[in-house]
Length: 356
Image (tube, rainbow, N blue to C red):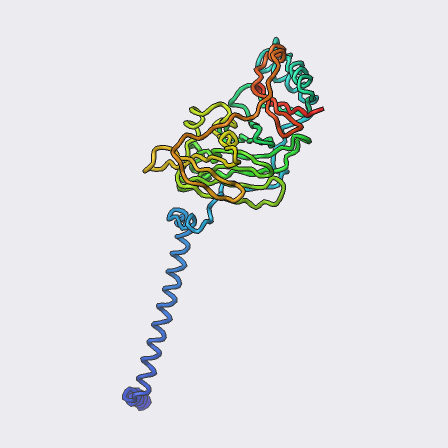
């Protein structure tokens, strides 16, 4: 009992001492500051986690403002990642005969295409080197090809023939893929797999060693991405305000403007001074496209214009009438690929001819 009184007496005596009370108050304040700091850190961590889990940086436009998303849907990869579609022309004949028999009927197994190609080759002083068969049913086609300047560009349609999942540049001398890029679609959520996927490629072109690709952005604007065919995987990107709807453009533009379904051939909208005219500008506030002339060398865009894009006719070599008569297949275009090659587009495939 005496010990308890002694403790109580000691506590009472200390409680009357200013230094002891000050120390107690300081300990309490220190404990409270630590508690508030720990709670603040926990709240900050939780808020940051939710911020990124629900993709608020993108939704808020923060990553756009910082320039982190420009060209994000185009990912340059090793050429070995791309499928090889072009094979030596001699190897293509058996495949063509078999496909024609299955899709067009046994009576048309001999399409006469080989004779027509020989006629064209003799007319222009060249010989068929490579070819690619993509089939006679549009919905089953897995790729498309187009001549863009001196470049043979291939679009890979891995999931749907109207959507491009990959771009490749093919060397017409060797038929090898020398550059390729995967197109990553914004609707990557598996729960949205049954919904119609938004196309990510709106335009493609080339100038010299540079590939020009027009893609959308997550928030509905337009990115113009340029990449060197021979070089590292670095890309340059220019962002333009507002989006573009390729289908109405292609419906009103000449045939030369179409690289393949739903994709604009930007070389058909290239001016004499080398600038590419890029259509964009659609937004909730804007119902009509505008165009900007883009200098891919400097990466700068000129003033926006509401005038019609000055479409230009792509170079084309006339196909001899005899060649049309020799085959049951329709011969579409014969376009030069540089000074030594030509691309013949025919119903169901392509042929690359090399100057002899």
